[in-house]
Image 1 (cartoon, rainbow, N blue to C red):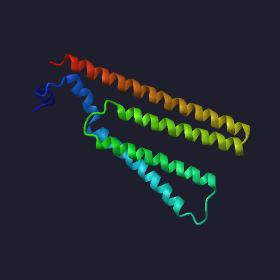
Image 2: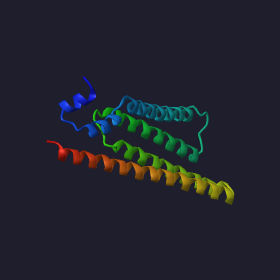
Image 3: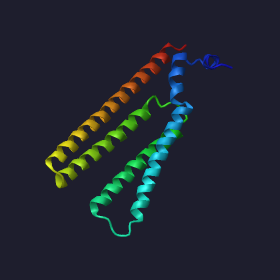
Image 4: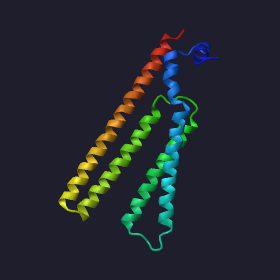
Amino acid sequence: MSEQSRAAQRDVPEQLERTLATEVSLRSRLRHVAVGLAGGCGAAMIAVLWATEPNALPTRTQAVYAGLIAIGLAWAVFAGWVLSRRRPLFARDRVLSARIALAATVVTALAGVALAAVRGSTTDLVATAAGGVVFTAAAMLTLARARRRRRELLRLRDALRQDAP
């Protein structure tokens, strides 16, 4: 039985069927598996590196390790959350991932600027701040695009629900 005839049997509008099929496709799910593995493995590697240090690390280094582990775990938990859902999320996953990316970018940029201010020259500080601004702006743009996509999908869903018999 073709996809179109299955959609017709369930009275699901074809446009919505096509749009949501990409959200629950195998390719999309495999991407989330990769994100979860990358986050979990990254967090585990940093935790092992930290645990196997023969001497106590400086406080700042411990804080950075803890932050990197938290970021990795955030991505792993996010991927687990998405994969545990068996229905379309209407781009809610995109918004959440963009928020995680923005938070990680801001924290990393602030830490880099603080480190450059303490240990580097004025050139280092300006370069680090400029890089932080560029990456933060890119993360903010990603969040704005994710929110717009979610609004579009929700509008489409609502419009198609009203048109459905």
